[in-house]
Length: 279
Ligand code: PMP
Image (tube, rainbow, N blue to C red):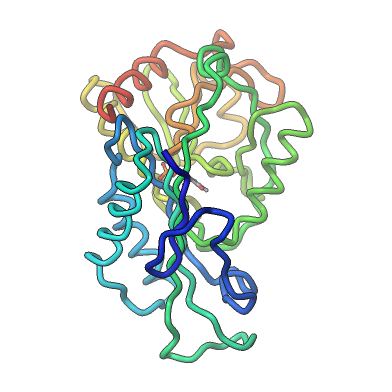
């Protein structure tokens, strides 16, 4: 079960895969990415992830890359690695060129991937729920595009960690709760699921979409609306969703207990539903 890297068509050991220093992904954050996970040797929602990757490339005016080419490269790396519970990271940068803000039209995109074993969230946190904090959203206005410019997300996650919390969620200047540093955010209030609508202020999460479908199957009403920071403290349940996060219950926000301050009933039902669908 080797952990591998892919660099423009070549498969290599991770520590041998190097990119040129004038890659625009490195100098300008001019790159998009996806993270896809597998369960029991089967990629989960690969099509949806690759659709989003394509939309991200369009959002940054990258030249189109043949969909079959990407899909084949992803599947070949996945097969070579033989990792049953894998996390596959794919990053596409605009290319390598002498540093200049503007770019030439005929640049050649660079495709890199890594495949590793998924580092699971400890079962104790899954069972008990996590503590999170709120931070001001200082990101740009195109958060629906999955670019590698995620320094504000890294800063916020680190701030949470320094305070002994698991993660942070972004709140706009006017108090609207957006999403987590690498997850979407949901609350349950009066047995209804509520999350932020799809706008340019959040990433259209694949897990978010799966959770909405699961909720419908379970007869749980889903509403997309703006939640204020003051609304979320009185939630019955709250959780984060993401490819690695899956569905992770929240027991406290900014030190204030949520519901009965452990992972809620509906959150647990949804998590079981997700695992069943993915496995
Ligand atoms: N929001 C942000 C900012 C993210 O980085 C992620 C993780 N990709 C998500 C939401 C969740 O998306 P997904 O469910 O597709 O992993």
